[in-house]
Length: 253
Image 1 (cartoon, one colour):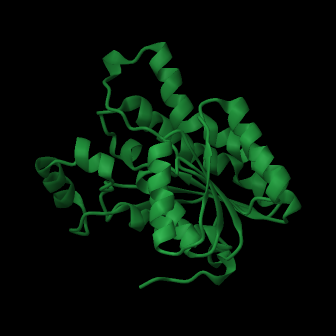
Image 2 (image 1 turned 90 degrees about the vertical axis):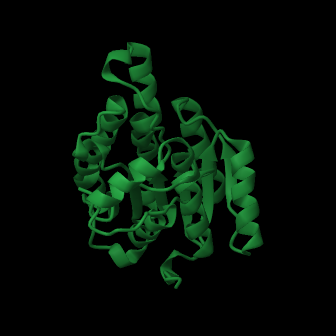
């Protein structure tokens, strides 16, 4: 059953990494609520698929912005250009990331910098770019997608997990500065989510069985489970929530 958040209609949202996976689901759920969505990605093919799917469902059509969020200068300019042309931003969803597997021994300085760029750095500069707009708008909601990986001490991608721990710290560190302007900032820590990519690469029967065994809820989580939490945090229904981390992992940790 769809939950309607009437206050979200016609609000303006920015989402990084919205072409596929959890990001695509977030874009779809926000469009279903009537939100004016702008999503950033480098994958034009997947972005077209997301837009086509949303059009078929007759939801509000999102706007795709082709942009490499690792190029901070271009990313900031893209955000500021939307604000200049369309108006203030109500909702920012920092989502883009990459959980490529790697070992501690294989990390080079270049690889480390790249993992921080895709998994953490752009979060800060997107927040910086929308802050003035949200102040002008007398408030806003910033939602940072993290992970339970660092809490679990996952060993298969240390640089990724460290960046995700940084997102939790970033969220708490900026809450007071933003809060005095009625800007809320929260993070979401997803558990094992069966995106198309995860299912293809890593969520094999043996691993899936192990995850389900360790979860309190014996069901496979889907991108929609995360998107529903995004809607809650984007809406004024959660107006008393800031500086918090909301875990969506079926009781894994």
